[in-house]
Image (tube, rainbow, N blue to C red; front, top):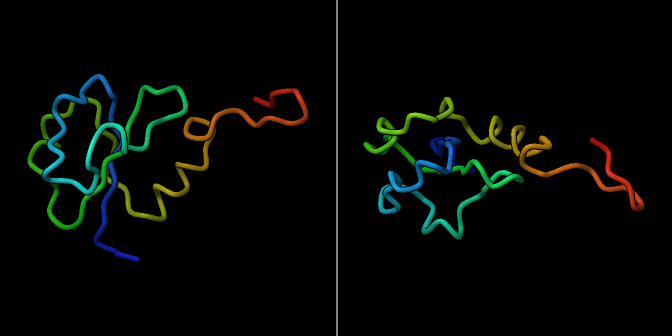
Length: 88
């Protein structure tokens, strides 16, 4: 596991600011998105890409352990389904 890998969450209303050449995501289609489709996650190794400073809706920068914890929340997985009912 690369301990130098960094992750950032941002509002997809700013998708036009993302420079895919500077991150480890190749396109909007391959980007991890929140369950409601309003947020995305980008990742990179090493130095923070220049365009990150232009994002107005950016989260703090996370490491792998932190982002994995976030990805387990309902915001990223959706409500739990159990035999025909939804648990919120």
